[in-house]
Image 1 (cartoon, protein in one colour):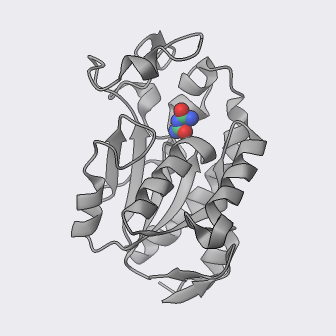
Image 2 (cartoon, protein in one colour):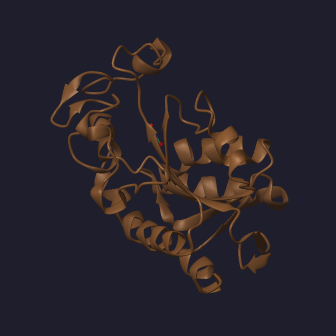
Length: 222
Ligand code: C5J
């Protein structure tokens, strides 16, 4: 184990059994014309997370450690998208409607794919999740268990929605979870700050957080 400098106290990092989790770095959230923009969000706020995630991805690939990419997405017939999700709010376009990158959040459409800078490689897990959390209706817990994964390092978007939900689900399943501060972003900077504070409060009640440099500088050589 390696102690990583983190909030609220050092994170016990397990080389080889820690998966890098990249939540929903999809064109639909990061680019103009996607689901995130349809909700009225400024998608450029998410762009600063891309480079730190790319550096972590390179570090994990160089060491052959497990990597998980998630995509928030639905079946073409929307049978896995409850009306409570599809009809909520007043977006310019709803899930399943056609946009410039295809039908919003539908599997196989261009907008649902992960941005080219972070595109998955063969051998990496790619999880399509109908909910905000990565464990609901995906089977990912069994896949991680089969690989011997005990710890999860979280990155991706958005901090207080799919990242925090996934981290809470993971914490309940017994994983030690570390969120990388500069490798996650929100359309709402205040919500990102609040999510970080909630996660680490009460003695790491959900997990830890730290900047990417603190983790990268502490990794064993590959
Ligand atoms: C949202 C996500 N914000 N990936 N999804 O609806 O956080």
